Each structure stands twice: as structure tokens, then as C-alpha cells.
Image (cartoon, rainbow, N blue to C red; front, side, top):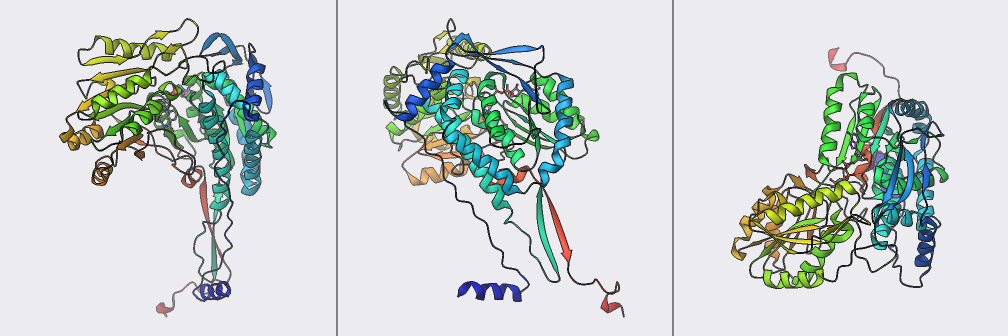
Length: 556
Ligand code: NAD
């Protein structure tokens, strides 16, 4: 009864009742992989299938598989004699061909109803959730050195969630319509961006690659996807799943390439419509500068989205629960070898609690197993991604050994004979402004500063001002007033802020992710706002009565 009444009342004041479309989706359950479970059996079979194999991966441009002579290999980080993929770089000419092929497909794709486009992503999510799960997990484990759980939360759960929730948000975006006042009606048309979008992905999350290319495509854009050299195997599997799910040719061009060659070529094109980047700050700054240098040649202002690094903190107050601090910090700092952008790398502990925290951290540290995650499921983390990364982390460890301010409390041994292994390292610093507390390391290195308990307010200010980043951070305190104080003082220090929980582990649609300051443009993938970034809305007014006299009544 209420509904017709509401509809009549709305129409009296000039509004129309609109049916709102809602799409129900839920987060993909994270499977447990217990011994004897069907998912574990399927994964073990998929891992056995990859053993000793090298997959040949082409560039895919203009719906053709293209093999160039610039051949490269992706190796398994924990066993670098195993070449997991043989691929080739697209050169400048091939990239320009990819741009042309994209542009030719753009108009028709953009005009497809969003519901049609969304169906492709729902289908791809179902394939990942079911028959293709084991394959993509195994490729992520072998190629990017992830443990079972780290592959599962990334290449299965997060990627499935990105595809399903983005599709839901895209369809529901159509509900967001302007007011209509008689005799006119107004509507918003959610167009893709004019031109093409360049998606540049990092090595550390298979899901991020799928999302950087997938979200703009879903919104009606055409995309050049440059995957990371060290994540080619899993990225290509995701690309193929999208195609098999119904993504038409030429909507996403799959173009492994040398980073600078790709960056130089896409930013030189007058058709650049946007860059969807995740990776390090220097790379994003370089791209941004190139865009500004080329600004006069573009047909539109390219939209720039960049999610970059972090120097994430755990602040511990004297009222904190010690076991939460210890378990949360070990997971956050060392899972995936500290190679998550959200990994905790600086811990601030009060002197009153430090002896207990230190004892427990060191005791648990001894139990951490580093090794081959495919052979031993008890492995907590594996090798770091490549030789370059291994050398960079070693430099930081050398800094820790030689600096009078720093003492290594545990771990830090490096060995790259078989794989790029770095043992988890805990360092205590006397100087809270040592570079090790400011710069991103992206490895299994945790630095601790012990502060006088009573000075916690000063420490909160110190945390806020120590590093250029603003990605994630956590406060451990049972006293509510301290939590409130910390939330205010650290308001700009983290785009993802945790209270009595670790700084990692954001879930699509639950904790939309991203930070500002040097950490990026904070566009919050995993939220409805993100899909809006990849549209160029058009407002359409239609008038249903003759316009009449051009003169205003008061003029007569
Ligand atoms: P990276 O910057 O080295 O590489 C990222 C991508 O950019 C790669 O595909 C690389 O080939 C490409 N690239 C390199 N030079 C380029 C150029 N001149 N033009 C165009 N592309 C170029 O980063 P990485 O080592 O792959 O990833 C690690 C970094 O990513 C860390 O800093 C981490 O914090 C960050 N990250 C951030 C988030 C987030 O959501 N904020 C998520 C994951 C990773």
C-alpha cells in the first residue's frame, strides 16, 4: 500500500519512481586445503602438472598470437633453474599496433549494455571459483613463490571478488541517476573513457593484474595490459580465462614488454585515455611526468590511477594484548616474505611491554619455515621474487649489520644457491628516523623502535611524520581513549587503518584498499567508487514539451 502512495507523492513533486537494480554477491569463501580435501588433491595435481615445465606465452595483439625475437624467461623464485614461462617482449611497433586494434574495437564494446559486459566477469569468476581454481593457484605458487594460503587469498578469493563485486557495482551504477523535473527527463550515461587505458601490473598479486585490466574493460574501455615480467605465467592464465568467459577479441591486448618501452609508447599516444598502475613510486612518478610532458598532444586528459608502496606501522600501546601484537606482526611482516604493499615493516613497542613482546617474537620466529611451498605445505613463506630484489634486501641487511644504531635480533641469513631465500629478520633500532624506518624494503625485514611508555603521544606524531607513505597502519590498544587519540593523530598516515588487527589482509568490499601521500591516488579498488573512475559520464536532458517563446514573461 505504501509503495503506490509513495510513487504518487513523488510524481506530484516532479520525481519519478525508479526501479533500483540490485545484484547480490558475497565474498568467495577461502578454502582450507586440509589434508585429503578435494581442493588440496586438485592443487597437488595442478602443481605436479607444472613440474619441470616451461609454458610458451605469446603477446596477443589484434586477436593474434605474436612471437617476437626478444625472448625472456620467468623463473621460479624458489628454484631458479626452473623456467616456468618463455615469453617475448612487444616492441614499440607492436605496441602501436595494439593501440590501433584496441581503438578499432572501442566503440562497439562501449555501446554494449553493461549487463552484457558484467556477465563475462561473472562467468570468469565462476570459472576461477570452480574448474580453473587449481591451475591459477598452482601457477601463482610456482611463478610468484606463494604458499597455498597466500595464493588462495590472492589468485582465487580476491580475484573472484574483484570480478563479481566490480560487475555488481557496474550494474548498480546505472541506478545513480539525476533528478528529472517536468517537462524534462534527465539521465546519466556511463560511457567508457575515450581512447585506451594502459594497465601496468606488479608481480606480487595475480588478482591486481586481473583487476587493473579487468575493471576498465568491464566499464566499456579497451585496455593494453602489460603484466609484470615475474608474474607472466599466472597473468596469462587470467587473460585466457577472461577470453574463454566471453571477453571479445581486442578488448584487452596482452602485451608483455620492457617497462620503459611500454611507458614511453603509451604516453606518446594521442589516444591515451588513462593509466591504471600498481607498483613502485619511482615508476608511477615517471609515468605521471611523461603524461604531463605530453599533455598538449592528448585528445583528453588521461585519468591516472596509481597504487604504490608503503612503510606500514604497528603501534603498540601499553594496554595492548600481547598475543595479538605478536601473531599479527609475524603474519603482517613475514607472510609472502614481506612483499605485500601493506606488510608491517616498523613496529613501535612501549618499554613496559617490550621484554614480553620480544621474548614471544623471538620464540615464534624460530618456528618459521622458509622454503619450497609446493613440496612442504608447512612453509610459512618462500623465496623473494628475483635476483634484483634479493640484492636490494641484502643491502638493507648489510646496513643493519654496520650501523651503530641497529642491532639484528634474529634472522637475516641470505642464500641464493637454489632460490632467492632470505630468512625473516627482526632488527631493533635506537634511531626512530633511521632510513630503515622510512623507506620501503619489500622483503622479510621488521624494524622495532622501543619507546618510553609515557611518551606514546609523541610517538604517534613521530609515526605520522617518519615516512613519505600513507598506506596501512595498525594500533594495538585496549584503552578506548588511546584508540580515539591515535585515530585522530594518524588520520592521514594510512588509507587502511586497523584497530587491534594486523595491517595486511584487506578484503574486497569489506576494506576497500589504497593510501595517499606517496602511496598513490587512493582510488580504492574493491569499492563502488573504483568502477566510477573508469567511466566518463554523460548527462542527457530530454525535454518533452515545445520550448515556446524565446522571451521571458517579465520582458513583456
Ligand atoms: P615496479 O614499479 O618495479 O613495477 C610495476 C610494473 O611497472 C611492472 O609491470 C614493471 O614492468 C612496470 N614498469 C617498470 N618501469 C616502467 C616504466 N618506465 N613505464 C611503464 N611501466 C613500467 O613494482 P613491482 O616491483 O612490480 O611491485 C612492487 C611495488 O608495488 C611495491 O612498491 C609495492 O608496495 C607496490 N604495490 C602496491 C600496491 C597497492 O595497492 N598500493 C599493491 C601491490 C604492490
